[in-house]
Image 1 (cartoon, rainbow, N blue to C red):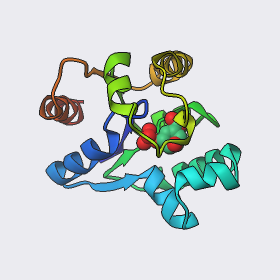
Image 2: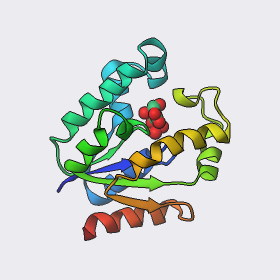
Image 3: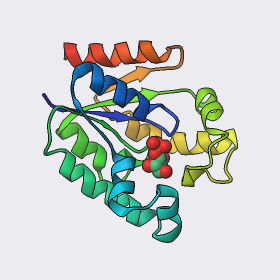
Length: 168
Ligand code: S3P
């Protein structure tokens, strides 16, 4: 079974959905952010501050090139991961990518209280989220599948992902 990569903007619930899905399908589970934090013994927000974004993006790239060698793994990817170092092409070639497409309003409501995401520190304006999402959407749209999540609850999103994995 090929790996499944959950892709989407910060606040799309990739990690929560990934864990639930891996239990349901009996797949392994990897959260790229958590793995990078563990390997570096450092939070991502600290990593951005002390080592810089470039270091973090390089860690993402390294980890992806290891993960593609595995199979039967659900992978929750960091929101920016597909957008750097041609990672989206690497993922598409080595598994199924699923873009969890949420609208700005939902993302804004989920992210506005968040202090842990370095790219949004001091940037709680809807316009900032919109701008970053606009810049990234072209990449997200390269995913093999897209789920329009706006009007779906968590269980419905899970069912859609499940159906995609089983039917294709
Ligand atoms: C980032 C998203 C974060 C994390 C890092 C950078 C981004 O992951 O990888 O803070 O560039 O969008 P989540 O999407 O899990 O929040």
